[in-house]
Length: 193
Image (cartoon, rainbow, N blue to C red; front, side, top):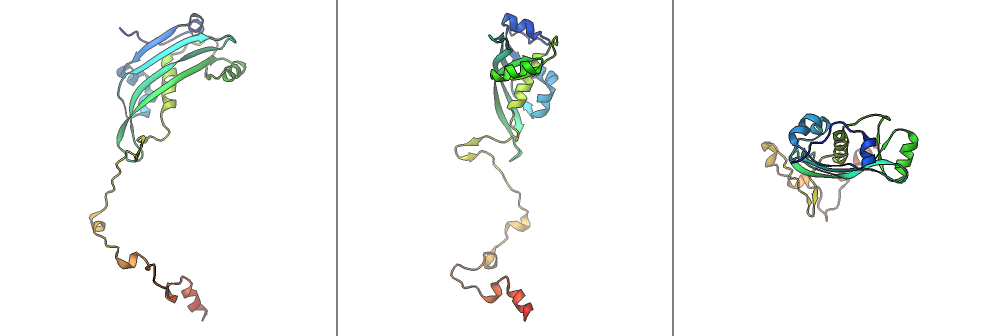
């Protein structure tokens, strides 16, 4: 049986004890509780899988390491069709309360998560933040070895479908010598006379 993710945790207690949270956030739960993610994607394909390890290091950074995975559906901005996108996030976040702790955490290579000293926080917010950061800025089908997988179709009106370019639209032939009338300055020359 998968244990439900707690809704409020004390990061001091979790980092002191080295707590590990592992499990899933169901689609139904994320639709209700991860509203920012729900609004940013067309649909969520599957449950969100997470593995979070709380700890503190030798210079007293209180942090969480882990991994988050989810599959979402987004609308391609190139062809306007839906496509599935696998999101995979490695987490390395330190909990900070002031500028000194932020500098210490950033120097150690952690991203930062600001909390007030005694604040309890919802780990689902952290998970949602990481998934939002993993979303592409512009949703498009991924590139393949052969270019894009988008199938862009243009709807050309019937009146233009049988349009014949003819010889006039193709411009002068390669071997043809331009005449004085082909010169764009010919009009100016005539005005000068």
